Image (cartoon, rainbow, N blue to C red):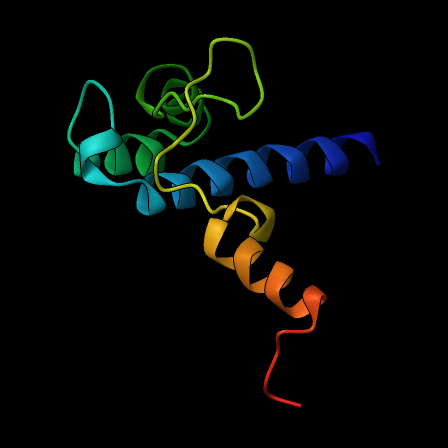
Length: 99
């Protein structure tokens, strides 16, 4: 039973790495072209997956971590949108003419 579980985990990690290579933008891949990493992970299986995780996967800053710069394309909540806040304030005052 333990061998089956270990095999499922290893196959899951390998499939994750394979799909992660395919989903990563070409500009974000490190050290090799994206197609090269795809072949390494596909044909190299578990060592290839380990190499992808260690050397090829893009480094992404974690949101909220000290020193991590916020991404400019990150979605903002409605409470960060000044236009939304003005509209909300107008509705709360009762200036809403759409009744």
